[in-house]
Image (cartoon, rainbow, N blue to C red; front, side, top):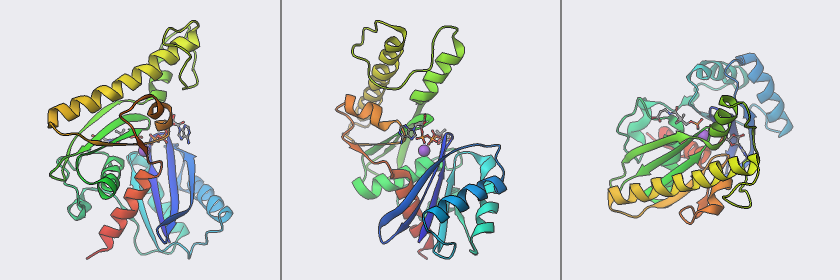
Length: 257
Ligand SMILES: Nc1ncnc2c1ncn2[C@@H]1O[C@H](COP(=O)(O)OP(=O)(O)O)[C@@H](O)[C@H]1O
Ligand SMILES: CC(C)(COP(=O)(O)O)[C@@H](O)C(=O)NCCC(=O)O
Ligand SMILES: [K+]
């Protein structure tokens, strides 16, 4: 089976894939200060708990948007698995992908994986909205090129910044309040953030369609996609495993001579 790992700024999601399905997957917190040894303990125990032996894993693909964790992860993975090669998504492999990338050294590898997966499932003229630590919009044009990305603070990131920078505002649970007219502090923040971000999403989708003069298939992924998707008609599909699905496709494309 294939082990695919997506290191995001908040969570590391990894899964084992075989016969076109995810046999199992896990989500752990990203901690840039943890060492290879500490991650090894976590990986060993989760894989053992899932009854995945080290010889079951035939190939590994890694994407990280936290550069300082790439080395510790490679070290940890070479330590657990007796594999000749672990693939790490980086610009040297972008020539093998079905989507063209204009600025290979800047775009996040998770956004590349998202684009590869959404292009595979929905074709060109697709936008992926990733509700992670950052809220990102990645658009694939009719010419199979990633035409551009929009990046905003993620919902939880915005809430944490607000609570951190104010004396009287608390952390809140990200759920729609009963009304946009908040009658207490919690509902007021929920109104501003949840309804506000819904407007942000609609605005970016509409603007992108206007600028391209095309309509887009919109797909959402990331931890907080389920908060906003029910509130906007622009998101019809949530693909929770999109980034890992993209990593599977990239792994297959790399292996093809
Ligand atoms: N399954 C989930 N249900 C609800 N919230 C989640 C879930 N997974 C992640 N989150 C929250 O969504 C936010 C973004 O998480 P994630 O998409 O994993 O970000 P990143 O890819 O940047 O690491 C975080 O605040 C996280 O706590
Ligand atoms: C935009 C991101 C921070 C998103 O990361 P995430 O929210 O998934 O943790 C990441 O893709 C990144 O660091 N990108 C580099 C800049 C760019 O894509 O242009
Ligand atoms: K992500």
